[in-house]
Length: 83
Image 1 (spheres, rainbow, N blue to C red):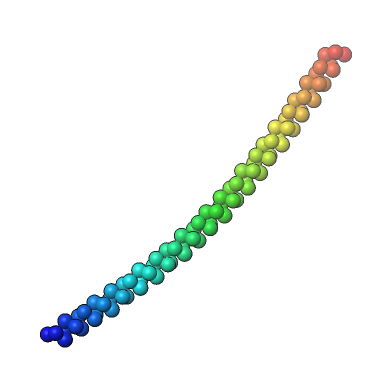
Image 2 (image 1 turned 60 degrees about the vertical axis):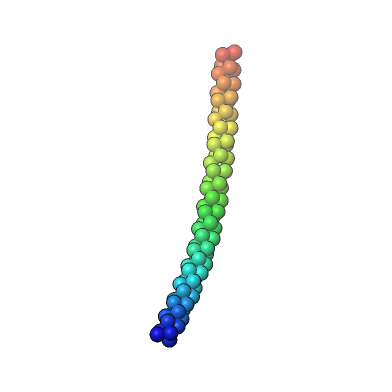
């Protein structure tokens, strides 16, 4: 009977060690996956920021062009009124 208890304890110990190892490996895989996702998020964030900056530059250029056009039209209209 004592021998059977000892074998059972050993089997439980081996099973527990296996479970601990599996959990440790899964924790490592999860950590690696999280790091990869964080890297992707930073990459996407950088690309979005670049796109936003490009759009802001385009809007600023369009505003400048529009204002120049409006000023030129007003100047022509003022000259035509004075003629």
